[in-house]
Image 1: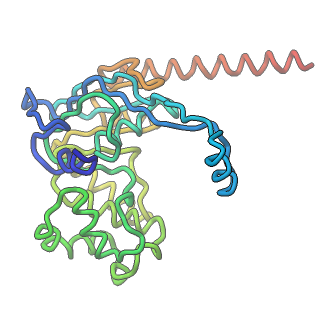
Image 2: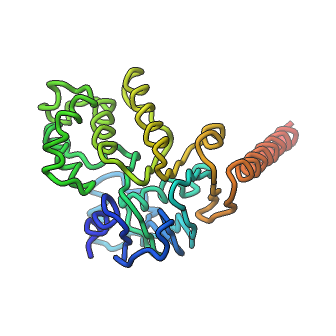
Image 3: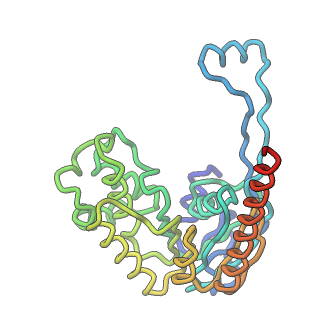
Length: 288
């Protein structure tokens, strides 16, 4: 099965999993078992195409090194849960959301998704910049498993919500980043999702549109959708979520009630700051 087939199996369908086996429990919205994600990187610094070709011919390029970003992650999210995901930069939070949204294919493990997903991550990731906004509505909608008939019916609504007007007929390469995000948000939130996946609360477009997009997200949350939220704002996580997991170096350090996990995370962060401050003071004394 190709990666895109697996994406279609996860997003926009009811009760599906990456291996097409049904969920064991109808109350579970997301089930993650022993999930791991590896990326291949190279330490080679090749600045020019000429250097790349020479090293390829001589076969002296360094082999790529495998880096495990997520390491044996397992957790369940029940329907209606609002799950916050905490972690320092590089912990693996955004990678986890991208796997759940179908953007990345995991290296190992099993994912089960029960319901329709609205991924509010990289909003213009599925766009072709050479296509018009109109064409990209159908392209991006297909990526999210929306039928053409459904998009035909909702087309005017998408254009109106995006506030793009006549620019909908212009190639997306001429759009600003804010315009692309507006269009992506308007498409992603078009369905009535069961699961909302959000990497930071969005700051989409201008002030007027940010208010409108925030209102839309709040309406979705009020309807009882399941939420998975990555945010660096502890106050935001406390306000929105009722449960939380803390990821560090690709592993789950702690999971449970939101305030309990947030308190432990903040205490750990404060401890790291104090330790770093002491190390800097020690280095300063040694230099003097």
